[in-house]
Every structure is written in C-alpha cells, then in structure tokens.
Image (cartoon, rainbow, N blue to C red; front, side, top):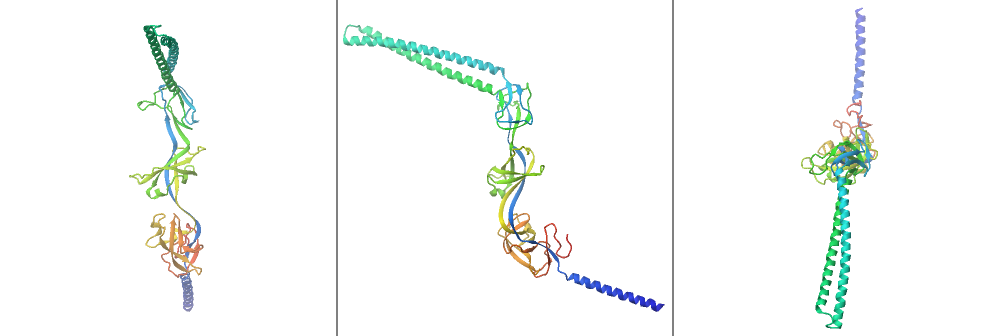
Length: 423
C-alpha cells in the first residue's frame, strides 16, 4: 500500500512537470510573436483648414416705424407677424388741424392767382396808356420838326412828359405782375408742404419685411417722431428677414484670409441644417480689446426658415489644397516637437518623422516634408508615396527594422503596439 501511494505521487508530479514545461514553451512562443500595430495608408485627398465661429443671426435691417406728424391713430392695418411690402399702408393718422391748414393754403393760392390776374390787367392798361402817350409825342415832334413854330414847345414838352410817365407806369405794372407771380409760387410751396405733411398721416412701409412688434392701437395719440421729441412712440417695428446678417469676430491670425464675396457655410444647431452665406463686408480694423475684426456675412432666407436671434456656427475656409498626399496627424513626429503642439496650419514647410511598414513588415523610420495641417490630417510634400503604410498607434516601443503585424484601421479602433488586443 505505501508503495502504491508513492507511485501515484510520482506519476502526478511527472504529469505536472510536463504540463508546466508545455506552458512555458507556449508562453515563450507568444513572446516571440511580432506585435500588431495600427497603420493608415497615405492617400490622395482634398484638404482644407477651417475656422469655426459662433454668432447670432440678426435682421438685415430693422427699424421702429415712427410718424412724421402728431395725431391720433385712425386705423392700423398690420399686426405682429404680418409680412408687408415696400410702400404698403401700415396705419392712418387723424390730424384735423392739417386739413384746416390745407384749406388755408388753397385759399391763399387762389388769392395770389387773383392778384396776379389783376396785376396782368394793370400791366395791359398801363401799356395801352403808354402806347397812346408815346404816339402823341411822336406826332407832335414830327410836326415840329417839319414846320418849326407851328407847335408850341410847351405842348411838345407836356407830351414828352406824359410819355415818360406812361412808360414808368408800365414798368411798375410789370413789377407788380412779377411780384404777384412770385407770391403764387410761395403759396404753391406752402400748399405743397401742407400736402406733404398731410401725406405723412399715411404711414407706409419703407421696405419689405415682417412686423415684429406693435406699439399702438386705434385711438392712440402719436407724437411726431423728431429728434427733440423724447416721448415719441413708434407705431410698429419692422424687420427685413428675407436676408439675415451674421457679425462674426475674426481673430487676427485669420484676418488676411477674409475677402468680400467669400462663400461660407452657416450651420444652425437648433435646426440641424447648414445654409450658404457670403462675406459681404468687414470693418478693416481690429478691435484693440479683443484683437478681432468684425466681419458681416449675409445669409439668404427666402423661405423664412431662419429666425433672427438663432445662434449659428460659421465655418470660414482659411486654406485649401486640392488632390494632395495626406496622412493622419497622429502618424507624424515633428522634428523638435509633437505635431499636435504646432499651430493649425503651422506645419507648412516643416519636417517630421514617420514610421513606415515596408513590404517585409519591417519598421522604417523615414523623414518627411509637411504642408497644410488640418484637425485630422497633414499634407506630405515629400518622403512618402500613395499607398505607403504609416504607423498611427503607440510608437515609443518600436524600433527601426523591427518586424510587426500591420493592421489597417481607422482612428477610432487603434490596436496597441505591444500586444494583440484592440482598445
């Protein structure tokens, strides 16, 4: 019995020893397996460097419609939300004293016209008298010249005097007519002013827009909207919403890339939609406090989908490269620093190092020249060709010439370089 127990223990120990030896051999084989690394292919694509700015949509133009004359609201034809056209009647004011002024002006004009007619008659009478006096003097003078002594000199002098007096009366009558005509023009101007002021009692829309606020109702007393009137109350507020404005503060580093007519993308998060906009104008001056330049972007809104007050994200295209060789930013180690520590677009003309997986699955450290850098990719000017595999995962444990197992992957699924697991 003791021998049997001893034999059993010996067999168990032998089996355990064999098992441990097999496990050690398996672990040893695993340790010598090449590590799997995440790689990406160098590919030709379009690169653009964008700047995102947030601003509030504003009406293209917005005013409080005031009345030029004081009066009571006789009728108001619009309410909040109404769309109006340029020249459309918004409200009518009742101004009784303006009607009286109009009557006075018309009467004054008729009186001045009558005075002008009378002055015209006086001119014609004076002209007739002058013609007779001048004819008489001419005849007497001719007779005296042909037959001296036949006509007394006193009679000739009297005829000449009457001729001169009649001529002066013609001049006076002509001046009276001119004065009467000038008075007609003065009264016409006064009547025209009264009519103009009375026309202001009809308040019309200065442009196409939407009524966003109504201040007055029928019967309200409206003061004349002049600069000296502090109590003047507007009738309605009118906004032009078919075209909206975005005023974005462009930082100093991007000012040189902004130009009038530049197309931009305007995204409205609340609508989850993007719209097309255009740089229409900019201040051409930096703010001393913020070091930014106000830039206005016009956003067409023909269907009134956008509402003033919404926040929008503007994407300004600062630089663009068409059909260039690019690799992920995470694949590059800048000479003298990490690529991610450089300013956006600051890799232009710089150089870096990348780890390339050769056809024999060996690591090769290769210098590259870099161009435009975006948030995810960077342009490669030289050092790589299309289709080259570059390591985008952890590279600190890799060495030149080391054998690896490349795994082409996206940025979201990068395996670790020191094992076979996918994070």
